[in-house]
Amino acid sequence: MSISARSSEALARRFGTPLYVYDGDALLARYERFRKAFAARETLLCYAFKANPLAALARLLARAGAGCDVVSGGELARALAAGFAPERVVFSGVGKTDDELRAGLRAGLLAFNVESAEELARLARTAARLKRRAPFAVRVNPDIRAGGHAHIVTGLAETKFGVEAAEALALYRRAARSPWLRAAGLQCHLGSQILSPAPYRRALARATALLGAIAAPLGHLDLGGGMGIGYDGGPGLSPEALARALLPGLRGLPQRLVLEPGRWLVGPVGALLTRVVARKTTSRRRFVVVDAGMNDLLRPALYGARHRVVAVRPRRGAISAADIVGPVCETADFLARGVRLGPAQRGDVLAVLDAGAYGSSMGSQYNSRPRPAEVVVRGGRARLARRRETMGDLVRHEL
Ligand SMILES: Cc1ncc(COP(=O)(O)O)c(C=O)c1O
Image 1 (cartoon, protein in one colour):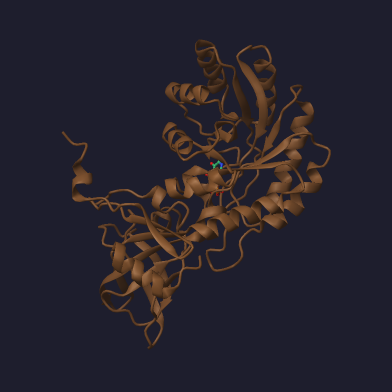
Image 2 (cartoon, helix red, strand yellow; image 1 turned 30 degrees about the vertical axis):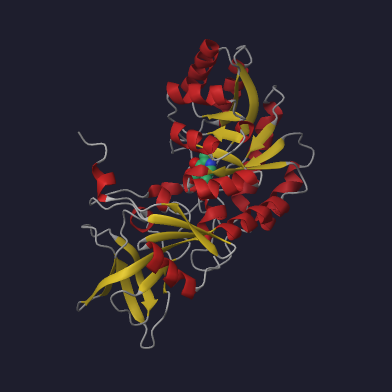
């Protein structure tokens, strides 16, 4: 994220705080870098929409040629409105409703990533009623441990995701008997915030073994998302390293490769700007109370995630450990604990870094707090991409 301190302060003044700010040029540069790393073989990057569904960002990626991974009817509608070509969209999720299956069938997606035998049967019935053949990929659970916090590990047999390899094989066999199902691919997703290519290599080996046993000629192999970023300022998982780990194992496979990165693309290009509201020091801790809370950025409370927090205009003076906490009435309401921070005064702007993924998209109105405005900067120009919610928005749907 290359937005300067001066412009951050100007943005905070112009649009108010808390404020999500994204660098649109950096997002496109990251997409291009990822794409180039895999240029040696046909690869479709399906942006994991859940990381950040903001239309202004989604449109940039759609125009750049990205595909998209959606997990709800709402995400599907937003992805199509943002311009993602339906034949580049995959639909994941363990609990797709009939309405969502119908919406996906009508749109004409690349594949439904199917997560159970029941879902596959329901997809066939829905497809028959609509008289539209349903392309599907079985999501196989590879039983590989990878990823950050336990809540974002999805590729273990204990999680609700995917089906075991033996069942996946049986599903492809069963699907071959239905005129309404078309086996389009095979999918596998390990988890999130994965910093090493090793688990992907292992997942590829398992997926290739499975591909060899599936009779249907599958068009793609989808290895999911989960590529991690350096929340501590480190480089994260480099797409070049991932490509080096995967491309040799893919040689000879006819399938197109699909990947579903979310966090890696959008995480580092966003920051949450927040102002200091109050300070207090107890015998145990130094607290800096800011105007953004866990409703705006849930990751620290939900996953124990650690974001760097910096003063946009650092003041001279002693640096000490501070807990950056919000105004929400929960002890879990912190943005960062024990960060090294110089003197901070009321009104100072702090930037919570790497907040572009699973920040705004996980936001809520908890404590009746309107959601923040969001701004996208391109070529040095800032544009409001989502207005700040009003008090009226809080009660809009109440009767
Ligand atoms: C099926 C699927 N694909 C892709 C992703 C994106 O993960 P990440 O943002 O870590 O790349 C997720 C995240 O939960 C997912 O569940």
